[in-house]
Image (cartoon, rainbow, N blue to C red):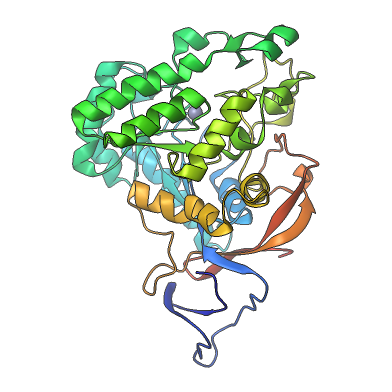
Length: 416
Ligand SMILES: [Zn+2]
């Protein structure tokens, strides 16, 4: 919608969206003049680090970081310590987020994603039924790929009865072994071991055939290569249930960001070539990659300060995603703002079969209010996240989240 309207919220749900809604007496009013009011953003790929690495992030700080970025729902990855491979661990993540919300310290809704294999070891499938019952919305071994094709086949067969997708971190560990950045001229110049595009593309190709064989839904996380975009495009033409996500950093940056051995640009999959960046960006614009996901991966300052080879992979992304995407896609005129919001809310909801992504009366009042034109400078010191590892520090960006509302309750307000 692209009009001036009032949104009436009652009991956590949207009651009406119309011009001049006369809300009953006593209902608080929020003036959204000049702001975009959109369905809350949804990020299906977030690392919260709890349990096991609470010095990097907790469920509470991650959910609050998400709300500050305009997200009302985030999916928490299972590669914690211990991993989310049993119903108790899955239930803990969901309940912990709810507990903080009850105490007035909540942020975005947190949906746990369960491990696909016990211990993320890639051998034995987890008990998916019990995990779904405990609240798991999908399965993945993210951080690692699901490497064994027979295990992947069984996962794609088995998840169908629960209506959930298998999320895949597509990486051939034999091809990427020892790699710390993209394979190419920059890696050669820096004397660093590279990860070839084929490491991602070969696994995506294999998984597409397995999805075709089984009828299951495979979702490719953080697509980084032009080859993978092309494979997904061709698979869509055949009607295969494969989907993909684009991360803001793969659309905004290339391997050049690693020069100077900048560990804040070290991530997996790595930042690729300019041709890859363009392909991922175009994939999102065309809808081949259905949604944006941040792969928010908090790391402690001291760990990122190590030598490039030894520093951990990953960057935080929840609080910069909207502005970076506006700058990369909307400002140059390649994607209307309405469509960007669709890729960040309605599309992930529809794709994954979850609530959200709409302002229809009767739906949950999960909303983001933002100024699409306000310019600001990214200062990691102001992040709500416990971690500061971002390559966007100091960037001049456009688009500022003003308020995030979850179930009718304000969970973030600028300056609040
Ligand atoms: Zn991953």
